[in-house]
Picture 1: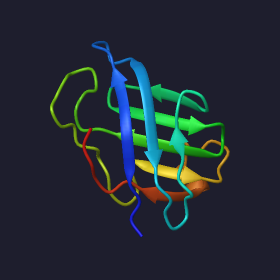
Picture 2: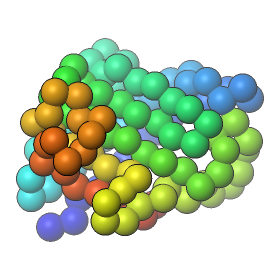
Picture 3: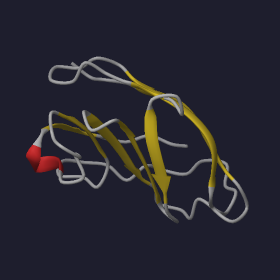
Picture 4: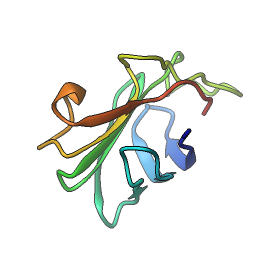
Length: 109
């Protein structure tokens, strides 16, 4: 069963996060989460965004292009083994092998 990620996030011209609301649907091992500022810690770098609702899950997306540069479509780098994933049941999920993980296949921002 394929899962779907929808939503938005915004970064400013310096690459810093301004706002977000990302939602993953339920899949075979993951119930899905609504990653919002009300319940999730969020961090971002030049090429990634990472959201965690407390320590029960993590959504980590790695992008091909620099997030501080405006492009019409910025591909998510995906595939088996990462570097983009959603995981549950791990203390922090920063190491996806420590929890139930589903890897992001592909997509655009």
